[in-house]
Image 1 (cartoon, one colour):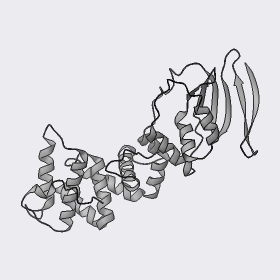
Image 2 (spheres, rainbow, N blue to C red; image 1 turned 90 degrees about the vertical axis):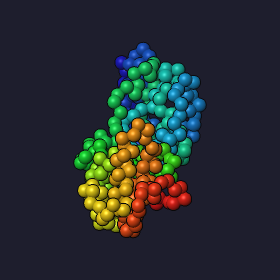
Image 3 (cartoon, rainbow, N blue to C red; image 1 turned 45 degrees about the horizontal axis):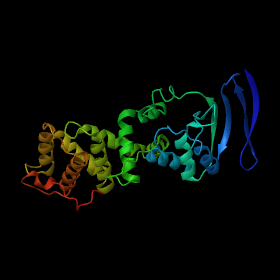
Image 4 (cartoon, helix red, strand yellow; image 1 turned 60 degrees about the vertical axis):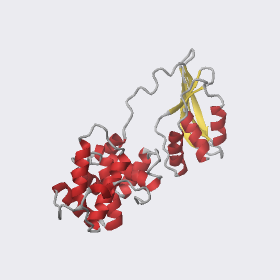
Length: 288
């Protein structure tokens, strides 16, 4: 085994740091730290192995957002090359570098013989990231934060974009009190609307539209079944949603979200209905 000392200099000629390159004799691994520019990323992608997994545009876009917003950090993950110089792991980070048009610094390993054991570790969920950062009820609040982030930053109805861990942490820290209120309120009606995504997002929307006190009052009435009358929109929603839960074929989540929003809005406006027909889908009415 031999050890060489590598000096790391970035594209401007500034000394970034240094690292020992460890070579394990006959065909061993070599480790360096490199600044990857978009041009170098494109060069490395030209050396991609032919049977690498398909590129996920969504994952590339998520990584690129972190790079663009200066939220990229060195976490020890490496870009891997085979003994013959083929790129074996790291294509999403390289494509993100090109998409963001920003350089990033990373460890690079050369001499890898196989990827059969790569990515076998248990992935960190968003809930685990929040738990490590000291947030209470990480599983539930991760659902709420991710859902509300999508509502605020994407075309929520059709987008499959999810926040990165960095984006979710930043969003939660900026809106911690409001998101925890939405999570707790949504959890109160879980026996009616089993999706915490729907119930917490509807509370968030209602708080922004009518104020948090109004939203808290409506959710308290719904959870306690405190109806003004049998024509109360919340009564019709509770009856209809509870009945539908017993059916084998369930409606899409967006449809159920629409029911909840329509019932809450009608209750705040003190509307009355003789049946639950007012809950039916109306694509012409905005949800926001």
